[in-house]
Length: 130
Image 1 (cartoon, helix red, strand yellow):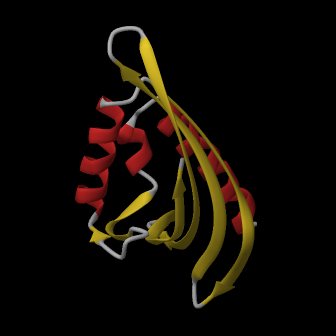
Image 2: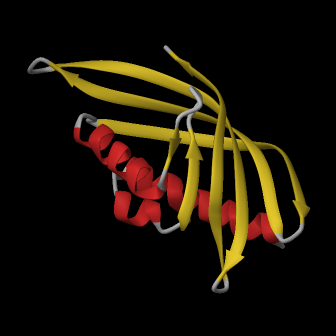
């Protein structure tokens, strides 16, 4: 079933995020990815991955998890709304660290491309940082 395959893909992607491996992370996205940030700015796949790499360089560690709020399947597109929580630890001075928590609600649009599920669009509809 679609949700089982996509659940497995989310686990792999979360592991790639936590290991700060943007190469493994980006494999889930279609080349024509449209990534819409909470502020409305739209990024291409290359821009999104470059932004992510920049974050990884400034990050000591990262933990993330998500759960599906709802989903639907229409016209060969699997759409899911997920809630995500990420905790980022950034170095601060020599031995101190700074913890940042980011909670988001995101809408993912998945499509089978060349026999694999790929994300063609992500919309971040809510983002809270504290």
